[in-house]
Image 1 (cartoon, rainbow, N blue to C red):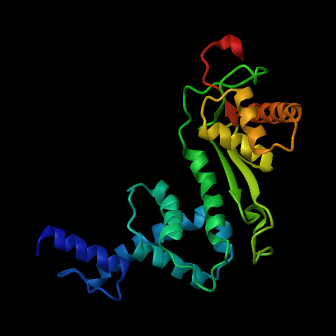
Image 2 (image 1 turned 60 degrees about the vertical axis):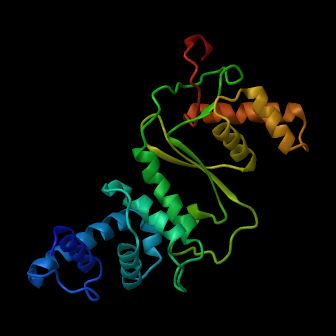
Image 3 (image 1 turned 120 degrees about the horizontal axis):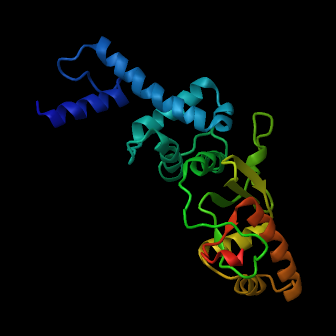
Length: 253
């Protein structure tokens, strides 16, 4: 048997030991070590990355969910830190929700994964803080911030609060890494989410162009109301490090 075939047989048995025979010439006692090692490592990383989601399942049902991921998903990254992202990708693109799965499982899983994503992402070294000149510098969403919206109030979900239908309006959040490298979760609103979304999709946009874009989407507000609201909101976001600039002229901030 070729080495490739041996590897394939080994992998298939590790994933589904009941459906695939032991690789030729390897005793079950030795394979049991690998079976437990591989699955327990995967289960451990996912459990630690999605504690709230896990708390909504019985131990048996959680093990079944992780086993399905272990069997059905081909991870594209060899790094353990990427397992959580692979799990979310699996839930979004492959997994078919079962009756015992909460209706919000994908949104909750994504919300929990974002904490890890923000904690390990590399900050863009060209980013600079903004002081008092929010109207005079190009605006960027920090590389260590995420502007999010969900149909469910994912920040409130627990074993004691399990919603059965989405909210009437979206729920908005910012997850970001603060100046002490601590992960922070911030509940926002539709206008803040719009401002940050426009900055994210139009990196380097200036304050007045940003306000004009908001005015087009929210004509019920006057130009002055939008300018005042945007200035206040963006200064708060700049203070937290969510909004930054990349202007190298230190006199501007």
